[in-house]
Image (tube, rainbow, N blue to C red; front, top):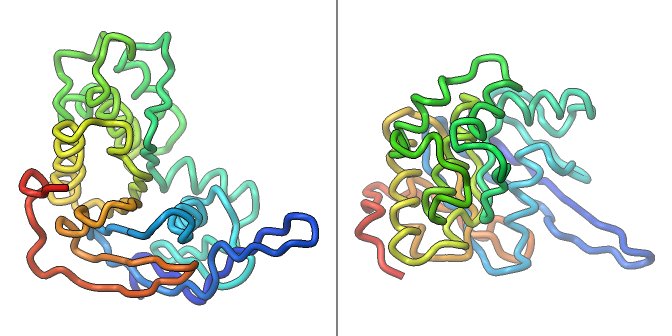
Length: 233
């Protein structure tokens, strides 16, 4: 069994009498320790896939598995524990608590899970050893995103989910964040999934899942992923 498995997953929203098929017949797998890029145009269903995999939304039908757990069969209480302990989230906007320091923001995540990593150690790993006592307003956009990544990693999650993690950053800073995510995957063996519309990001991935009209239109393996710092877009 693969680390992540989507099998014929559908997500249908009802808006009055209108039925919207956000995801329809989605099937793919992800192996443990892979850096995966889920790519597609706006409205293709890729963020819906991330939300279902992260336990923030439920599938209408089909099966979602993570590390032997059937996520699609979990109840509300179990999903809360799943989000808290198994998944690390990184979003386009950093969602930091403005009146807490970088260290305190990361410690927040450490306090809600069973086996956290030391907050100071994780901040050092993402290159912020000398910025721990700064508040978000005192940090650049790239530094704030590094705090957000550290916060996600401090939970010691099974899977790190990143939704357009460079979307609010300039080009050079975006490349640095992409490199950080790639290095994190390589150095820790943690499975990382990046959702993006940017086709250039596929160059750094071990596995690329192209999403189109709510389906996995194409899944490919990249035998020689590029270094993130060499990617141009």
